Amino acid sequence: MEIRLAGAEDLGAVLTVLDGTVEWLVAQGRSGQWGTQPWSSQPALVERIEGRIDRGEARVAVLDGEVAGVVSVSGTVPSYVDPAVEPELYVNLLATERRFKGRSVGSALLDEARAEARRRGLALVRVDCYAGDDGKLKAYYRSQGFTEVEPFTVTRTGHPDWPGMLLAQRLD
Image 1 (cartoon, rainbow, N blue to C red):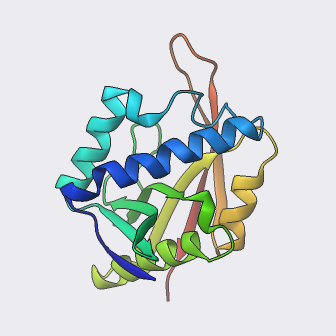
Image 2 (image 1 turned 90 degrees about the vertical axis):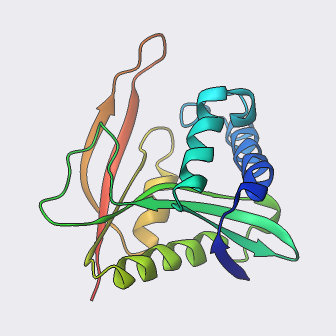
Image 3 (image 1 turned 180 degrees about the vertical axis):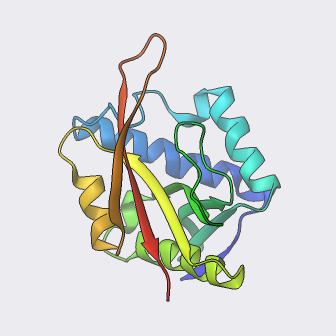
């Protein structure tokens, strides 16, 4: 598996991963996480991904010549999360292509996030995730060494509230 910075040429493949994740979540009855519409059909989400790629925040995992997953990291937290009291690296996005399930793509991308934090001299990595439905996403991040910090709720106009969990991991 190769992990590298995403480039503009990767936008279509990254959107394919994100669209596939939405499709999979909907099939699992977990549409509360990312809704039911493909990311590629929502201009604001496409622009968000383009921005992350342009700013050098996005990395892709490549397996068998295909983009198998994406992670986006930055020092900026979303508006619904309080900044940490120390410098941190924040995982803004993590998604994997379901066809590569069982090949540790998500783990490798989180390892890359931790490695990036260390390169920047940071001892804290945080991430938030959807905390509704069956709680499997929280359990996944716990299995990756993150600890739950606090729940939060994002109030969305015209949509149900989005229950979230903030998680953190300290690095050695």
